[in-house]
Length: 110
Image (cartoon, rainbow, N blue to C red):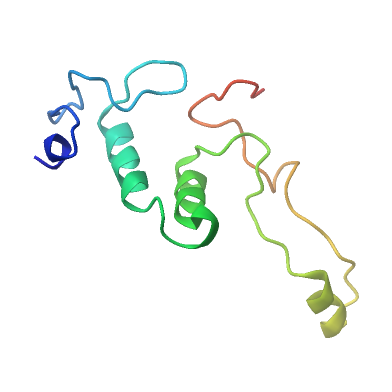
C-alpha cells in the first residue's frame, strides 16, 4: 500500500514488481531487499548532516564505491594534545580502511 501511495508499483513477498523500481546500476530490477533499501534511503534523504544516514547505511550494506573511507581518524590536533607519541594519520584509499568492491559493482570498480 505504501509503494502504491508513493507512485511505485506494488510488490509481492518475492520482491517482484511490474515497474522494476529500483533499478541496479547494471539496469536490472532490484529484488525485495533492494526495494527496502531504496525506500529507507528515500525516507532519510534529507536527514542528518551531509547525508550521513545514506553513508552509514551504504557502509553497512556494502554499497560504497571501492576505496571510499570506512573510518574517521582522530583529528591531528587531538593526537598531539594527548601526547601519545603517535603521528598524525588518515584513513581511506587503501585496505583495510577503505571499502572493498561494492555489491552494486559500480562502473570503474576493480
